[in-house]
Length: 104
Image: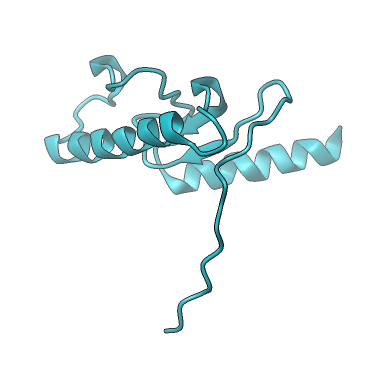
């Protein structure tokens, strides 16, 4: 399988619109999760989540927090970053928002 060409990126650019999400990711503990703290609060995990799944979420959370702090375009505010429990939730939100934009 051929590899696509690499393109340099100068970081994630900020968005001045209120409520703008500039970085969405999955997996996160819940839909609409805001990674505002260095660690995930115990109360943020869904009940009955296995230890291995918690560890996966913690690893992803650490990567996201590092990206937020070390973004080449400047630090990312936590309210502009949103996590989703799955890629499917993220896609459904995008479709919903797109359809609402067309309605307005």
